Image (cartoon, rainbow, N blue to C red; front, side):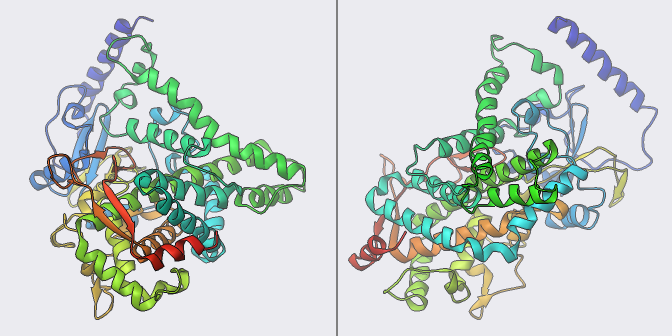
Length: 512
């Protein structure tokens, strides 16, 4: 069919839906929100760059529970922690579904556990992931995290100007070693490139309002040569990268398990456990898919999100030298000058813990979290929330709420500390940053552990300073970010130098 004819059919369909809605108005009103346009609703109102800040601004007019009409898709934006906990936690039985994302399907990302609809299939995937990465299992990964962190310190000494690349190398190396028992030599390794490119494609294309194909599915039929329409070109570029990222390392381990040559790894253990469960035979198609998906999302999610938080930490230290100084004083007191930090120092490094919390809050890694879908008509504060509504938690707005975090744009670890301990009366940003209810990030314990040991190790051995622009201005951390599902600084304008000859010696002599 010709695109023009498809558009006419599509237009008639939506006009009919609008007409029918007039005869089926709910008894309660919808939450307030900006008035949209016919058919497309508020799609034109949502910027493709940092939409979370626009939503936070709108909340001052419409309130913390705000209604948007995105074409035929009703959408609620939650701009407060109270609303998010009331709905996504306390009513998780009907707020744990996901909308089926056409973008995810087009990019071959629909195997992602975080994007799967709430179903038996999702529960099976979540159960296997939790069994591997729950809090009790974390100590078994500490040796890998320490080894890769110290290799990171050595790379920083050798080529400090490549800070951003070294950060990405670090976290990809940690998760690849844990998941597939693979070592990567440098940032140019195929596995580093694959995960970066695959996640970038999803992150950029899935921002609300960036691409309309989720709301107008017929757009996927527009050919790549059509002017001003990059969707098909982007899909053709990213799809094979995503498929290779998911399959290439898994196939390698599968072959090693079959040959009896596999070293210990999460993937090898999972394959062997599933084989034992089915009587020692080859994986069934269902189990094969489950194992690929669980290990693939561990690889993709851990590599990108923790790297983003570490980039934010580096920028913060360069802009807040007093925070850096206090952290180094604590490290000198607790760890001393004769060794590097390890996980046994965790409880004594209260200020370092606070820096990790503030790094997760200050420049939020997933500003809009994961969009939930309500599976039954609901009512909240006298407003009607229809079955099928998308519910989007604006985590950026929650973590920059001045009532919970005074001076929210400032980096202040002190806000979490009272009488030398973490203050339980201050809202823990980790209760927001990793999502809500049954959809909370199952890899959060590994992520925060990796972030903690990285922060402690870097501040114990390096000084971090800002690099100035050509006109002498200091970098504005919020002026240049990648606006995606995972948000990160476009670059890290920092200079790192060893704190002392002794610190440099510790790094060079550290075992890898």
